[in-house]
Image (cartoon, rainbow, N blue to C red; front, side, top):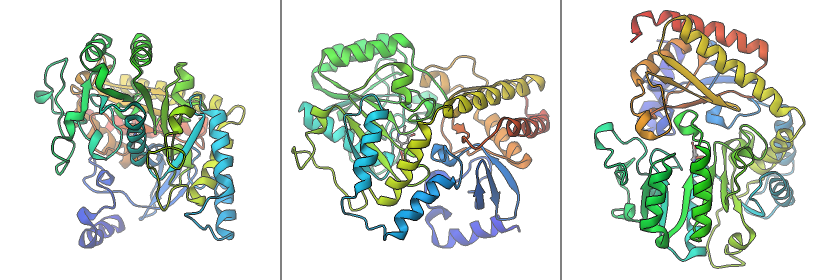
Length: 438
Ligand SMILES: Cc1ncc(COP(=O)(O)O)c(C=O)c1O
């Protein structure tokens, strides 16, 4: 037994399911992965094997592991005692920088995780509008709280009608009846969105969506879908919330809202905003954010909110994202990686397709077109799992957490020459899959 397996056996005796978080189990391996060390774009497992990390902490490690600028900022705060649960001078510094960077942000608040950020944002939207319901898109992911844990991985035979997707629960134990406060629609289906507004506009507090749908790999909103969404929400006084937990800082400093040229009323930021440390943010229009206590009547608080370690790390990281040339490098690496991966699939006659934007990408097997969740359910997960297992064997780490199509990505620490090494390893991995070709 190797050290990784030993560790998992030990963990299973004390940790529920042997993991600290359910999706840590890599479905391609049937066990979690343990890394003893991480530096830049590489990780080393407990047995000393080295991997290029194409999970990149699910997007949190946009600067790479152990970035010295982030580390220095964290060490400075630690040296001063890192007292939490008090206001800190770093809070306003990061808030100011975020308001200068993210188009919709006139005011922000800090929370600890993406889940908390969407939860508070939705409460705020209800408080501001006085309306009960939220429109969410089939397959879009917004964290683990009860209100949004529906229509995530709906099986193909239970999708329901086109204009009324099934509120398929993503877990047991969800508050009974809470799904009645959700209106579900299909991503990229402008006609069905218009229909949903005809039926429900008056009771909608907000529409929440992934403005670039990275949780489905990498799916972009069609321009007319996005334009209609912005128009309808404005016309009906419904708040438009971009959940940028994953898309923020991914392709440009202003995130998907800058990239798409569409400004929402509110947004959430997570993962990369903390430079690899726990921090998330929600923010937006000043008049809406004023509804938060103590100015207004909507509650948002927490012992660890705005913990100085996360805020210091975030401040250091966001300064780097704003540096000249940062996204030129991300773009060059991303384009080469995606093109090279598609060449690898072609060379081996495999029905795989990679698609990316900025520092994240999706890999799809056996699907030509993917714009909605209903396209995605055709994706050959069996091939994906074999591909991921073979890639890990060759020294490229992808994490398959069991989504319809998982998201993958890289950090800014990955260089162009290293991309060629990644592609060589993936070429060998796909070569080994001969027997698995469709
Ligand atoms: C778009 C989106 N929203 C919310 C979340 C939840 O964030 P967290 O895992 O930090 O709670 C995620 C996490 O993957 C996400 O991708």
